[in-house]
Amino acid sequence: MSTVILAAGVGKRMYSKTPKILHRILGKPIILFVIEQAEEIKSDEIILVVGKNAKQVKKEIGTRVKYALQPIPLGTGDAAKKGIETAKNDRILILCGDVPLLEPTTLIRLIDYHQRKKADLTLLTCHLERPFGYGRILRDRKKRIRAIIEQADASAQEQRIKEVNAGVYYGEKTVLLSYLNKIDTCNQQGEFYLTDVVKEMLKEKRKVVGLKIDSPQEITGINSKLQLAEARELVKRKWFAQLMARGVYIEDPATTVIDLSVEIGKFVHIRPHTLIEGDTKIRDGITIEPFTWIKNGKRVKYKKHV
Image 1 (spheres, rainbow, N blue to C red):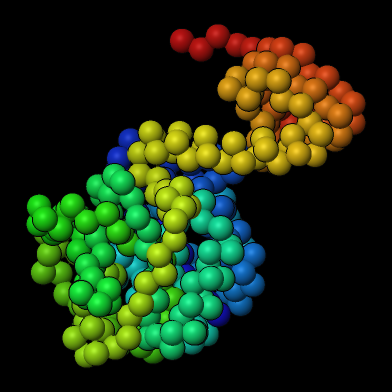
Image 2: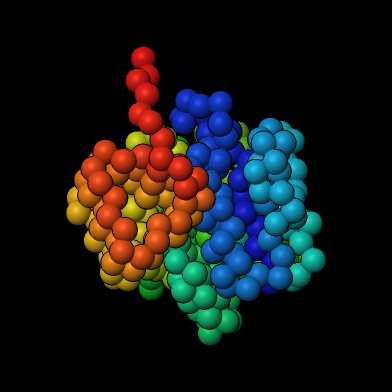
């Protein structure tokens, strides 16, 4: 299986010179979360579709993945095509580079569901109480998928639909490429939508199915600093739960920050207002006193920033 990760987006709403996918959550770039998802499900190859951000991304990620270039941002359909054309396997999983919280078990369920249903294309969907910004899933009376409508193209009635497209797809290379060659840019954004592949496949009676999941946090996309902060809190809560299950006592999680790269021994007590970053190892039985900043194993003096 080849996993194609769409990561060529500019990320204008981040208002940053740093590419969106290289912003960090507890010390780890967003894109690394997605790459690790693909690694955990034993992808034979991982293809990262990059654009103007290519140089910075390659410097950060290196040779851990293969790269496909989308030189002009023509939409998700064009990006997917660039990645799939590079793939050496016929089985293709498509992920979004700005959706870092998907569980590998969810991806395995998606693949299993595709095989059980003998589908031509399987996509991941989710119910969201606040679906703004997501493509809506349109179903017929028999609950079969009949279209995906992007936010910008949705009518007022369609925007009330709460089942959304999570941006995760599984199918065969030859099938996907044949339909990616049929889509056009006749939409509000003037782009090639990957979601239009669904429309084209359904026209020809291909079997398109959706696996609906009940964990909205998994499909959290990061398009702004606010969404980055929200994702950070979700990751932090899970990370701290793992640490405390191993015997680490974090006295005040709200005022404590610990990078995912930090190694902490047993019976460690971390007092409030503590920041631990980078390549740091905390030995068994240590107490970290309040207002401590440790970076790469060394204590750092706080500085004023104006």
